[in-house]
Amino acid sequence: MALLQARPGGPRRWHLSSYFWPKLASEGPKSVRRWARRASVSVPELELMVIPMNVAQGTHWAVAAVAPGAGEVAYLDSLGMKPPEGLAERLREWYQDASGQAEPGLAPGRAAGAPRWGLLRAAVARQRNSWDCGPMACAFAERLAAGVPPAEAGGAVSGDERLVGVSRCAIAVALLRGWA
Image (tube, rainbow, N blue to C red):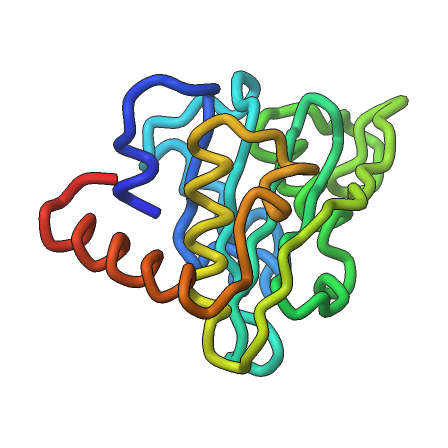
């Protein structure tokens, strides 16, 4: 994710670490309030957030893609599992807290007239075995970094084992060379 974040150009995006979601889910928006400042990210200007997620009791990787301005969250999961409970609502609470949109007197994270964030229906390639979720999640994140809309990024990847093997090699080369 750090290599994708360092990629020049593209929308105002933020590729977070896999530690973001568990901390937000278990401890709330205040627990990750400083993350954007430390990453030098202007939350109100974000067009896209890409969040890798270790789900299913730590045995499976998926990606959440958030378009904050539209209030849309795409959950890209190569096994087709349901998103974590309260995913869109928790991310909305964080966004409002981090961008300073909450108003006094309202419930935490609620801004006056703020729409509820919703989950997009996204086409997602399915893996054909039980071990390709990591490379597929990385491929979803790469497509998002390349500007593919969240609703389409999951369908722009193949679940064919041979092609996922090529993706594994490309990921290894990128990590060794330090570029995405």
